[in-house]
Length: 391
Image 1 (cartoon, rainbow, N blue to C red):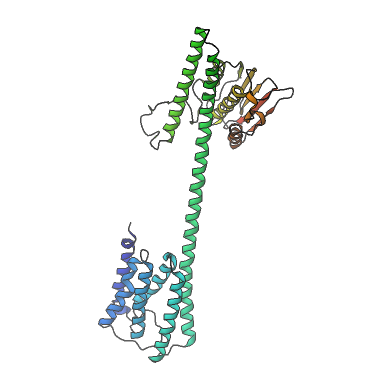
Image 2: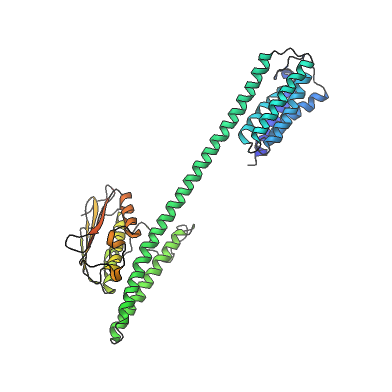
C-alpha cells in the first residue's frame, strides 16, 4: 500500500479531534502565554500540524518543516491545540526516515527553538528555563527514538542482504558442483574414447563400437545437462513433469536409474578396466545419501580415466542399515598421464574437495589419497536417514 494512503487516516483523525470543543487547550503548552480561543489562524495552524503527517514517510523533511511552522504558530498564539501532537509525530518520523541532511536538520531545529524561546520572552511568556530545557530534551529523545528505529531497520536490511548473498553464493556453488560432476565425467569418457578411436582405423568393427560409445556418452551428457537446466528453471516442478531428462537424476535427490552399474559400464566402454561389487540392498528412503555416494564413485572413476593409464580400478559399494560405504581404488604407482598434476594426485582438486564438502554436510567421513604400495584410493561413509532400513 502507498505510504501516503496508510498515513492519511492518522492525519485526518488528528485534524478532526483538534476541533472538538471539549479538547480545546488540551494540547502541548509551551512558553506560558495565555490561552486564546480558536479563530481563522487557528484553523491554519491545526491544518499545518496535522495534514502533513500524511507524507511523513514519503517526504519526512517537508512534513517536519510544515508541522514545525504550525506548532510555532499554535504556541505563540496560545491555541494549545491537540494538533500540537503532530509535531512530535513528524519529529519521530524524520528521525526514522530522513536519509540526508540529518545533522543540518538538527542544527536548524535547535536554532529555531532558541529563536522561539526568545520570542516567548519578548511576548511575556512565563515559562522558566527548566521548562524550556525539559521540552528540548524531550524533543531530542523523540528524535533519538526515530534514529534508533532507522538504525535497526538498516541493520535488518543489511542482514537480509547478507543472507541473500550467502544463499546465492551457496546456490552457485551447488550448481557448479553439479556441472563439474556431470560434465567432467562424461567429457572425460568421450575424450578417452576418441583418443582410442584414433588407433582403431585398421579395425572398422572396433572403431564403429568406439564411436558408438562416444555418441552414447554424449547423449547421456546432454540428458543430464538438460535436467540441470530444468532444475534452474523457476517453473520447474509446476508442470506435468514431462521435462527433458526426467529421471536422469542429475542435480536431483536421486542418482540416475542405472546407478553405479551405469557408471562402471560407461568407464569400461571407454577402455578402462573396472571391477565392481555392490553389497546389500539400498534403503527405501536414503535422502541425499544415495546421490552423494553416486557422485563419489563418479568422480573417482573420472580421475581414474584421467590419470590411471588403464590400470585396473576396483569399485565397492556397501549398503548398510545406517550408512552407505564406498571404496574406489586404482592400481599403479606412476605419475598422472602426460605428467599432469591433478585432483587425483593430491586430493586437493575441485572434484574431491567438492565431494569432501558434500559428505561432510551429511556428517559422513571422506578420505582420498595414495595407497600403500602404489595407486590411489577414495573412501566415503555416508549416513542414511534414521528409519531408512536396509537389508
